[in-house]
Length: 339
Image 1 (cartoon, one colour):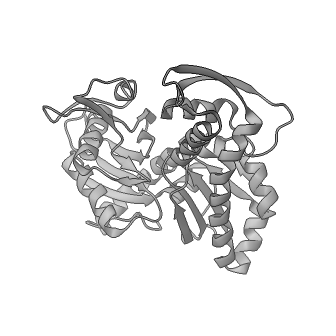
Image 2 (spheres, helix red, strand yellow):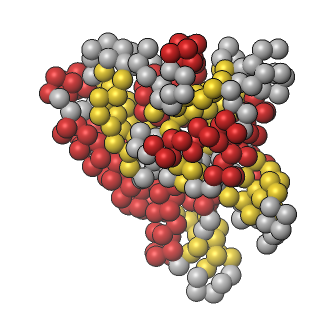
């Protein structure tokens, strides 16, 4: 069997792997479990995620990607190798790979991602900016001289980009996304209820009752944590309208960044964007009322793309169609250009 062409959405919270001709074949958390005593990787992905907060002292479950970039190079390399091997297990040849990176990464960070992929077994590596992949995956025709804007809210970063004629006109990346939403919930519960909860509980609250815009019906949820007063387990009931406060703090930071990008956008493209709307992708875009809050604060219709979580991976998969041209004319180039 010939080598696969693989697209990887290297997310801070989740990694999605797209194989040309097959679609998305893997979707697992960006978590690696390591035995500190032997410096050995024990598990990757979903299996490692189940160990978070439940491991003995010698085993640590780590997320090697923080704020959209590599924080632990060696562990990231092993994680990429795991996903490449799992995705191309029936292939005898090294795969060609396109990897998504946040729009604000430095050249050094780009090189780290590329080297990690090559050391993990990739024959040829190219990078594509997340908002560009997200726009392609959401179905926007960015090749025309027509302005589009996408807000991709992932786990580590929120990437905002204006696109026209097949490329990014201007962009911004803020380290304010899914992880920060979770951290805000943890801080809020600690401050108001003297209750300490873990990351998984905070994420469950965000997904089940989290909102950033007033809702017609108030939802409630019972959560368990540790009382900071007694040190003992405690259970409380929280409401969706009170969780809106800590979530809005993060949402407004993303809206401020969006506002700044629009201020720098050429007037002709702003007119197009007003007509086309603001496309929202990524898991963070699914927080209830986020599109309504943006529409109200910015004055332009915002909408959540279909299959928002997978948009970046789907866009990366579509970019695989250009790999032959890229390998022939841009050998050694890191960036996926306009083809």
